[in-house]
Image (cartoon, rainbow, N blue to C red; front, side):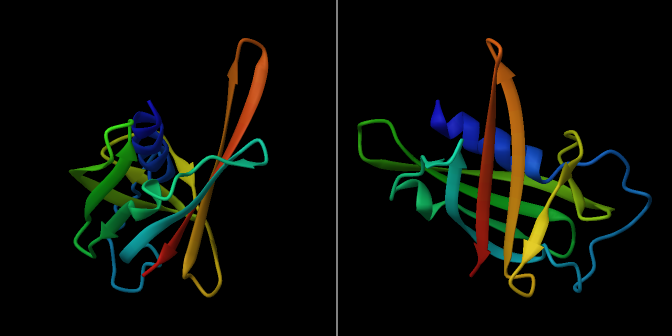
Length: 134
């Protein structure tokens, strides 16, 4: 289940509405290799040591390679997915056509975070996922 949440969150992080015909440039801050640093849900860290191995490589040509790590009681397992990404402007990104997601860059563009909120059974849950450039 956590694996699905991370993949969904990752896709949500990198999605946006319109591409405005922008292309990925070498100067785009998302280009590079990123490693999952934290996943904080309602103030509590929920990431495991295994999941901290998750990486995303954003190529300047608009492709991404996502290597997700998860532990379902059978040890640390991994899965690799390929995707396309688009910078939609104003720090919003689109991954494989998903909805718009704003990314907050910090530490001289070496860290990015995505904040999402979801309401389930009348309770609102907030998740902040942070990646660091490696």
